[in-house]
Length: 557
Image (cartoon, rainbow, N blue to C red; front, side, top):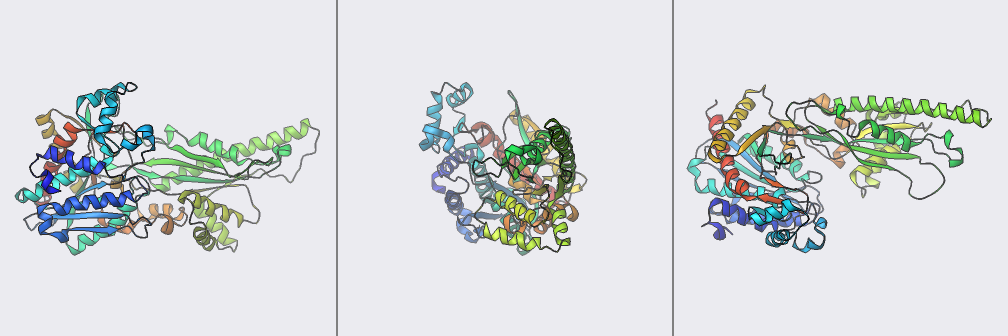
C-alpha cells in the first residue's frame, strides 16, 4: 500500500488514502467498522518505519462487543529520549447510506458521486462544488475518513523525517463515535497503560473531526480547543389512567410530558452564556406514551428525553434546574386538573369525590431509590434483574423499563415523575487557562494559526468548544467526585449499560484540540470535503503544531 503513494506529494497521498478508506462501508453498528480498522492497520504496517518496528502497531478489542470492533494504535518514537507525546486520534465509523436513495450503490464511490452532482440541478451549491474539482464526495469523505488519512500521511511524514520530531506520536483510531463511544472509552485504560509502561507524558491530543461553515459565506477555518459534553436527561412519567368517559378524574401523563417539553425544549434560558461560542439549547429527542394498541383508556405512563449539551455546567447543576422546572410544571398541572374536575362536577350536578388527590410527585432516581429503601424495598436488586431480563432493549428503553419497575414497588402507585440520565453521556473537555500548561498550549495554537494564516491567506478562528459531539470529550474530566456522583447515582445500571472509566479519564487528563478537515454537509448525502485546505494546509498546520508543542513542553517553558 505504501508502494502506491511513496512517490506522491503529501496532498495526493492523503487524497489517495482517503479514497481507499471511503470505499470501505464502515457504518456505525456494523461489521464494516472492523473492516475499516483492518484497512487502517494495513496502511500502517506497510510504512517502512512500522515494517521495521512491527510491535509498534497493535489492536485493542472493545470488551464484550458482539461485532468484534477494535481500536487501532501506532506509536512513533522520535530519536530523542523525550517522553512527551502527542496523540493523533480520529473515529472510523460513519452514519448510514440509506439517505443516498437511488444513488445508494454509489455512496462510497467518490468519482461517481461527483459525476452525478455535476448534473444535479436541485442544489446549485453542490453542483458548483462538483464542477470545481476541489471537493471529494461520498459517505465518510468529510466525517471522517479524510481525517484519518491526514493523520496517516503525517505519521508517514514524521517516520521519514524523524529528525524533525522532538518527541513521540501516538496514533489512535476508534469505532462507535456516532453512537455510544465504546471505542474511545475502552481505549482510555490502554492509553494509561502506555503512560505507565512506556513512561509517556501526553502533552495534548489532536482530533481531525470535520469543521464546516457556521453561516452562509463564512470564510473561517475553525480550530476548537475543547469539546462540548452531553447529557440525556430522561423523564419517566406515571399518571392515573381512567376511562375516557371519566377522563377528568385521571391524571394524564401525556399532558405532563407536554408541559415539561414546552418548558425545556429549545429553551434559550437553559443555555450557558459563554461569549463567542456556539451554545445550543436542550432539544427533545423522544416523547411517547406507553400504550401499545388502541383502547378507550387514557395512557398510564409516558417517556420523554432531551439532548442536553453541557459546556462548563455539570450534571448536578443540570439536574437541579430540571427538577425545579418539572416541579413547577407538575404543580401547575395539578392545580388546573383539580379546578377542572370541580368545575365539571359543578356543571354536571355531580358530587365531588373528596378522596380524589391531584398531587404529582417529582423526584430524581437517586432520591426515589432512597425512598424505596426506606420502605424496606430492594430497588437495586430489581434494577439489576430488569437490566438482565430486558438486555435486548435499546439502552434508553431499558432505562425507562427500570424506572417503570421501580415505580411499581411503590404500594401507593402515586402519580410521579422520575428524572434520570440515560446513555449516552459525554464529559466536556476544554483548555482550563488557569493551568499554566494549558495557557501555554493555547498560546502556541494562536501562534501557529497566525503564522499559517500569513502564509496561506486562510482566515482562522479559535473557539473553545467543538459544536458537535466528539471522542475528544473522553480524554479529560473537569467535574469533581461529588458532581460525578450525581450523574452516576441518577443513571440506571451505569456500570452495565454505559461503563465509563471516570478515574482513568481523570488520571489521563489530556486536552483534545480539534484541527479538522474542512467540508460541507456532514451526515448528508451531499457530504464532501474541501481538498485544498484539508489535504494541503491542514496537514502542515498539524505538523507545525505538533513540533511546537513538543518543543515547548520539552523545554519546560
